[in-house]
Length: 447
Ligand code: GLU
Image 1 (cartoon, rainbow, N blue to C red):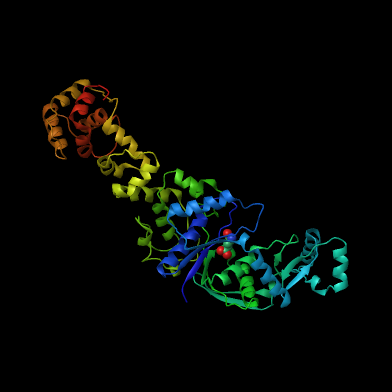
Image 2 (image 1 turned 45 degrees about the vertical axis):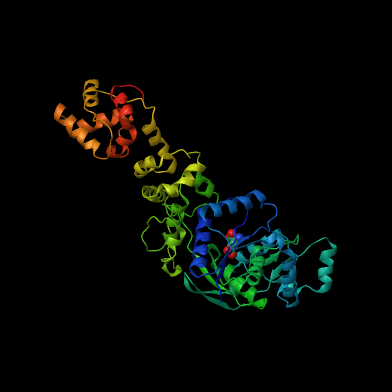
């Protein structure tokens, strides 16, 4: 069967690192298998879902290069859920309940007080037609529960191996709220059937009772359940779960922070597996090693420092042609390719290159501690043309003339030429600065 997977965020916020980790593994799984990737917006929560968030999710995925082959949203599919609910009612798997939240809370309290697990007691199944008519006449509206079969549900999780849940220990889940709106639990199954989803790859937060319940719903709707893969949830350096609301870990924020999409993807593709974290230039480069069975059971640590480091490593080898569009998007379309080549080893973010472009092109106010030394060095500047050998020829001459060596020799020259204590290799930078500007800076002039 052709592989088809889906990423199903709710448009109730922007994507954060935990979501794109799921999206990325779905995308990689689909591409490696030659299958398809569906983007499905789980937007049945009309109050919290917004069009802005929906557009933001698409923009974030596009920025990461995670293109989808198919798109749909649950709010467009309500009549399909109506049909499915009707079939469940006909099969006596969906039943109306009238308890209020307070009544249910009280029942739970009593059960707990008696040392019993707080499982819904199915009192609603005992209501007669007359009881129901009376409740409705009082103005009560039903919510609808799915009747679980009290048996063991087992599945072989692609990541976690054999799993099982004793459904006798679970409450019948609510699939339709009092106001008639559907819960994700049902809609997701109906969609997965209709789209022919072959593998459900999602977070471990759905990996226990939710999966067992959904397997029963698949069966009740006459469909075979797909294969499941539950990715361990990311934790921070302290081992705590990443809060979904953590703004600093939103894709938008990471983008603003100057992280390259490929640094994010290369990082998220590897954490949680035993594989080393290494820069990758294209998503396709991540395909050969992608294998869900490489994940361990423990939670992958998301370390923003490690990601930043990987980002810098990626930039250090990034050809200008590949940096160009990002530079242009940042308003840095005038960066000289030669400056990029010299400075890329010294940038943490793409935009840092602008500093080195201004060092090359000026104006720079030189930092000169010893004017006599700088003037001597100025005198010894060789004539142009300059190349990568000029720096050592010049500094050898300065060394001979002044007796200085090592840091004593190089640091004042760097400070005079760049007004900084560190930066790209001067043998590469010097030819770009050129004789005219170098001469002025050594004489203390802003140039
Ligand atoms: N909308 C659900 C979520 O974001 C999707 C879960 C699933 O993949 O089944 O958690």
